[in-house]
Length: 339
Image 1 (cartoon, rainbow, N blue to C red):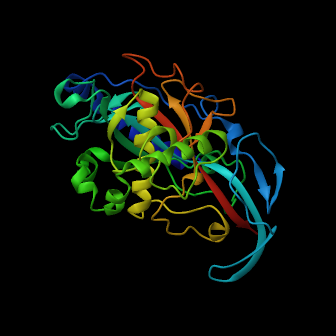
Image 2: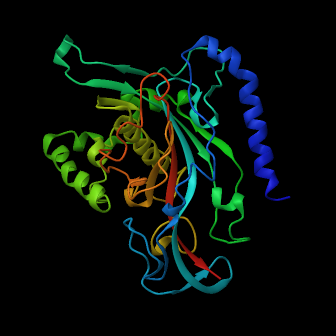
Image 3: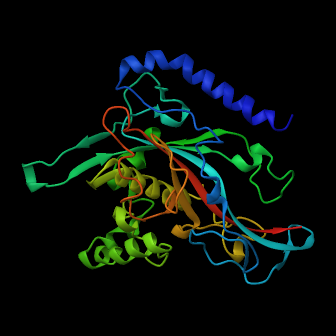
């Protein structure tokens, strides 16, 4: 019965979406997408490497974060306990990234509009006015609670799995900080310090590091090959393709969730016993796997790090008309003390 509860909740959400979809489609551009199949649309090899202490007992060709060296761990939450230190990657969140307000690609491409004009998105090409030579974009993000390992009961009662049901946790259309750069400065006032050529040039090193191995957490203002992490909203001043642009918007959103204490740290020694505050997001904690329009389910770059190059692994995965609404599965590194 426990495994049926999240499925039933998902069914209710989808039913509600389908009921509203006809009216919403007539009021805006066509939304495209498909439901994520947990068997065929998930890169299950992205779970690995699996480690016990510093030893990788199930290795992988994908880069991994540093794990606690000792296989033995101790917690006091609230009673003292001793356990085994394990490290793995879990599919924890699902995200829509789209320029079309109220478009939900991962819910089958339905629009769940409130019936009034709010939260606009766009893609604008180069302009002679002001000498702007690059395309700009405005993306929206929908953030789903998506603890897939717990739902599928791969390991029954495994304390390290997030025990939650499917939920649409955040929609940027109703967030004024996501709409305006000036309002976004309320949660990222430090952005002005990094708005200079020297700070931006350092992002080239983050691009290389994120593509070859892991992004550089020290360069927290960089999103590697995608651009600058600031401001923490979906206004992309240099959009060079749907994949690059949408991944940057998603990276900024993940950072925004950490800054607002809506996402927490789960990696490293600090995460063995409980989640912890991480107002400056560590980029190494996340991997992004595309689920829409074309899932990436195999290969080293199927679930690449924040800031990793999108060429060539994601080339051709976005296409005109039916392939412009993006969906991503968010993999999160978890270090945990198991009894």
